Image 1 (cartoon, rainbow, N blue to C red):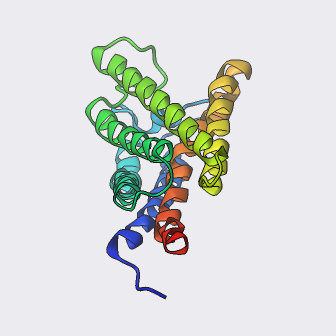
Image 2: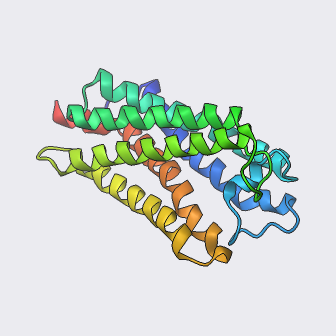
Length: 215
């Protein structure tokens, strides 16, 4: 068995990002008196005016870095080793771009005041970043699903992409279908979809995407 290279080990940053994000979502509400997780969005916890912002930033610090590192390393690996089809690699690259836009965009334009009406330029830009992140997520996951359906495609990644896309749709459609008091429940399907899928890609990178078996 060949010794793993650094880029393979960096795939584990996807797991670190998932654990860090989950910890922030679970424990940051303890610093936000009156926060109602079933009703409020996750982004309310990191809003500039939120009392939980400091705790969120500490818990989510590994996520902010590791999520981008994982997606970038996966993108570089599949490009260098020419893993899968061109369609598959395009999906991976778009997913990496989405992670960069998410990391940079939300850092530049954090939500100013959670749970309030969107009015300021900063809040409008926050929503614009969210729209772009969602669009790129849908396009990249769709590419990976289609690539996985093709003969010889990476079916495992395609199935996981389908699950992630389904979670995103549940979150998006559920927010308008359920009563406002359950907004936070369905919203969490969306926010965990891409973080979880990034962890899956990280594990695939750690395993080398099966490149050795194919060569």
